[in-house]
Image (cartoon, rainbow, N blue to C red; front, side, top):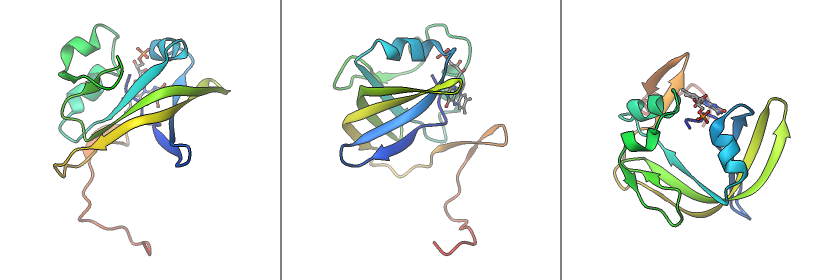
Amino acid sequence: MTVGTFTSISLEPPLVGFFADSGSMTFHRVRTAEHFTVSVLDDTQDEVCRAFSGEAGDRFAEVSLVPGRHPAPRIAGALGWFDCAVDTIVNVGDHHLVVGRVLAFDVSAVPRGPLVFFRGILCQLDPTVPSRGIW
Ligand SMILES: Cc1cc2nc3c(=O)[nH]c(=O)nc-3n(C[C@H](O)[C@H](O)[C@H](O)COP(=O)(O)O)c2cc1C
């Protein structure tokens, strides 16, 4: 499934997470799985984003995959990926926080931009335009 709520949680131990809707079929699979993989999409992968957020057919048949450390595959061409073991699941309102312990991760050697979802559209991030903050 496509998630926009993916976040880093802890460095020691290395934990990441995302919030899954209670009605998500992916969540029901993750709840009984031992592993999951997060692929971070780049700004050319809007079709992948749409495929994984639309009607659940065989989404994995529509994309090129790369084998990971465990059965959950990585999406080819992604900006980066995290192979995770399911660590904790916490009920939060109508969502569940799924916490994963990072077993392996990497980022693409090619500098590319991430796919951004902003004001209802998929768009690019332009890092050459700084904010007006002090950072
Ligand atoms: C940009 C974007 C971000 C999304 N983020 C989330 C999210 O963080 N959590 C979630 O449960 N659904 C999120 N969704 C919606 C799911 O991808 C969508 O409901 C999907 O069909 C769920 O598939 P499943 O029922 O097979 O798990 C997002 C969709 C888009 C387009």
